[in-house]
Image (cartoon, rainbow, N blue to C red; front, side, top):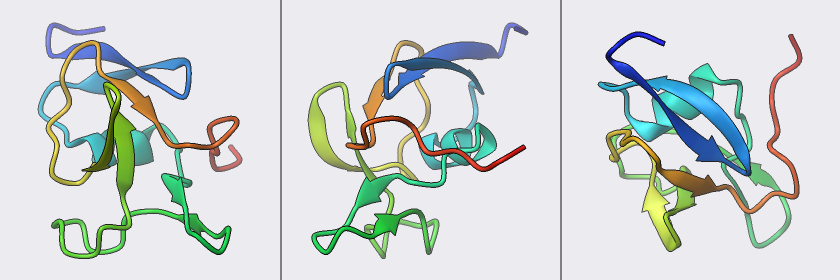
Length: 91
């Protein structure tokens, strides 16, 4: 890790992020493609990237419905996507 990098915890897994990234960018960079589940059971992820669509909502430090695209990453953040295990893209 460099001095501008630190860890956050996403669905119980530590992830190293850049200090100047939004939470949505950090999650996408880590391969997370399932930020939340819709009421009909569909996987949802960021769409607009500027807070309008509300598709990137996650629970952060116990607070629900936080828009990940608007939140800067902070050291020690605990993020819950509401999925049993973090969904990632295949390598």
